[in-house]
Length: 385
Image 1 (cartoon, rainbow, N blue to C red):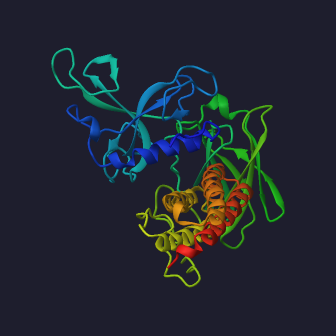
Image 2: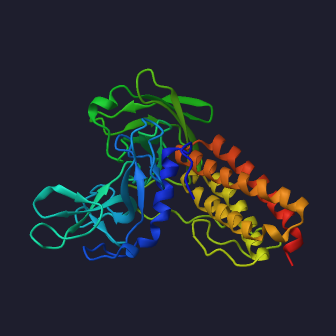
Image 3: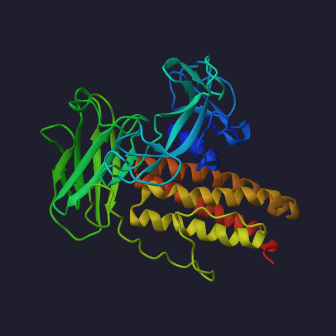
C-alpha cells in the first residue's frame, strides 16, 4: 500500500519501520540474499524524513527520490553506534537497548567513499561490511524515563519527566533525538499549566533541560506544556500524564492498570501486543471491538505515544474484512466500504496526534475510529454466525 504524502513525516517513518520489522533478528551479512534484506523504499535527499514505497519526487522540494533500506534494530538511546539484532544492554553506559529505525548500507574497510545499497565485494575481493546509520525520526524512545513526543514542526522532539512531585523537567532534542545545540536552545520559551496554574519553564544553568517548580499533588499528575521553539514560531501544546514519579535512567515502568473487559467478550489482550489477524469474520469483529475499546483506555492513562498500537491493529483488522465484502448485501456493502476507509484514516490520525502529544486531537481521532468501528460491526452483523 502506498503511503499518502499528506501523512506526517512521523507516520511515514513509522510505516517504513513496521514494513521492515520482519527482518529484525537477522544479522545483515555481505552474503545475504535479497529475500532476507529489508525492502528498498524511496526517500528525499534533502528531506530524509519523507519516505515513499515507489519512485517519484519529494512532496516538499520536488527533488527526485532516492532508494534506501530501512531496518528496525536495537540500539542505545545515547550511543547510536551500538547496534544489535536483539535486546540487551549498552556496553558503554549499561542502559537497556531500545528499537530504532536505521538505514542499512554496505561499505569497505577504510573506504568512506563506498556506501552501497546492495551487498557485494570490495575492490580487494573481500566481502562488504554492513553499516547502519541513524535516520531522522528513527528514535522516539525516552532517554530519562519520561514521555517522549515529536513537535508539529517535524524537527524538534521533547521528553517530559517528573523527577519529584514538585518538579516538572523537560529535555529537548533534534530530529535525531540528540540534545539541541546550545545556540538553538537560547530562543526557546515555554510554560506549564497544571490545575489552573501557569508556571514558566526555566532553562537549567548548563542548558541541558528546562524546569518548572509545581505544587505537589496527587498522582497521576496531568499537566500541559506550551512551547515556542523558535522566535516567531507558533506555540505548540503537549499533554503529559505521569502515573508516578519518573526515574532516570531506564528503571522499569510502573505496572499498568488492568484493562476493562469488552462487554460480553473475553478478557482483552495486551493493548501493546501485536497479535495475528483471525481468519473468520466473527473473530475479526471481536478483536476489532476489543482494539477500538483499548484506544480510549490508553488515552485516559496518558500513554499518548502508545495509542498507535491498538489503533493500527484495528486498522489491520478492518482491512482484513475487505476480503469479505462480497458476502454482504449491496446495502450493507455501501455501509462497510466507506466505514473501513474512515477507520483506516482515523488510525493514522490517532498515531499522528499521539506522536505530537496533543490529547484533544487524539480524542477527536479516537471518536472517529470508534464510530467507524461501530458502522463496520453493524454492516457485518449478518456474518457473525
